[in-house]
Figure 1: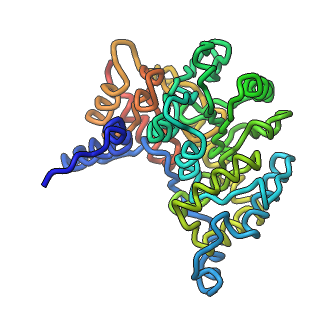
Figure 2 (figure 1 turned 60 degrees about the vertical axis):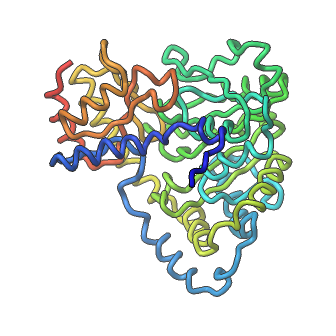
Length: 388
């Protein structure tokens, strides 16, 4: 028997990192010593006090049944407290905070609540592929907002055509930005609030990298802008902050109507995150943040080493202000996929082609700093032998 997949499914491209992984496996089979600077997955372990909290909580029968769909009250309160301490803005844990099974889950589910066929979603390009995929699943149309170096990798809101704005319902933003490493200013967020109110657009801000920043310059939340609560929802993740990518835990804060709608979607599609993981996440957010500061220092050393080393080798590099990605201009006469393949074949180093993040990512490759200093030095040594 043969079954046809849906037309909607057929519009979805292969997931970028699956393609990279296949190339990597082929190199390994040929005997290459792989240095993976491709996928942004922290290489350091989750701090022990968080692990110990999970182990203890896992023995509590309270957590052996379905959790509340919206997350335990204690978890939502901890999220609210952490947000207030970090950004100075307080959210009601009952109506303005929602537990997520990782921020990616919430990002993927949000369009179900608000996007119908024919609706337009404004998506940053280059950007996290899930913004586009979630829109496609619901039959919406993506309008790609170029993130250009000359604009500091911020979208030019004034350049969006009026005919697009008439159909636009949601806009995605992501700062600190993946893949460019850019950070947004308060003025930009204030402009976004005015833009969203004028055009009746929901602003979804993905802030998964909020705590990975450099030179002591902590990024702002979208909600630091006056009026943002009227138009916005913000997605946070513990994955990068506490080296908890595999734990799948995050949260959303924002306008109570948006939180309620997303919560209703989740009620019908998942049964919440394991309570013991929520307990461990409470420990992570409410304990000393020295482990996060230590992590930032490690990433700072790695970023500085890799950026300086690449520049010395003649690469055109955009040093990140936040996140753990290095955005690098591809040399003339090369495209991003070809350069990724060339580097892998000649050096055994995995990078990510910029085109995988959208049309305007072409001409760039992305490297991560989730590799120790010794391997980064080895990577630079190998890259010094690549010819263009």
